[in-house]
Length: 117
Length: 111
Image (cartoon, rainbow over all chains, first blue to last red; front, side, top):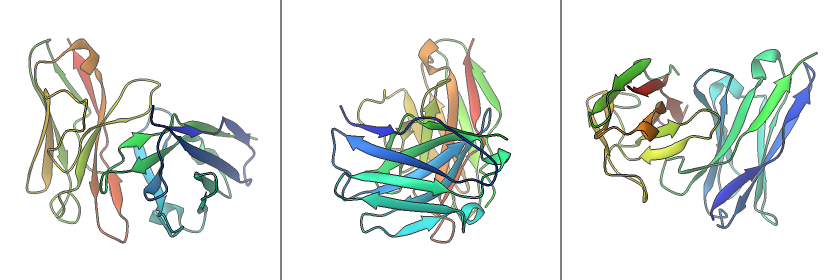
């Protein structure tokens, strides 16, 4: 069964950073782009950025300077770190794989990040 | 980058059809063939239903179809079933500067 498995829920204080991981299972994503999408409670989806197979990244303008995406080729795991957290960053964070061109065709289960003092 | 505009809600009785619109600009929906649609049930991750405007991934029923005219894309669900009740989001590629934008989401209710 092909799936993306994400790390568990996190609680962080304002100003801190959070790192979320995403590991493929049942399929090799070595040659594919991986994306990060977030969803605040009761809100819509927001694209955050992608990391390509060579480790190059592109982030949405809203997150430039605050988001860092990396990938560990030895474990096929991708990571997303978001810094300088505020309460507005409390959301579900999803990784999504792009096996179909410019399409998010497989999604992780989501990681809840709560920012609270 | 502004979100694509979708109606907040749509509804239909079992067996009927419902069509959801997704309006953008010539810089996103109107400029590229990379429009996709996602279904999200409460508490679940989104699921790809349509890609490249009108293509269906393996396993998605042919009751789901997509189209595009100008800056507006549409998703039609024919022969509505109870399990189709969900939130639906469109997404479009929007060029290299700010590559992807999602729609505002549409809650589909099966009456």
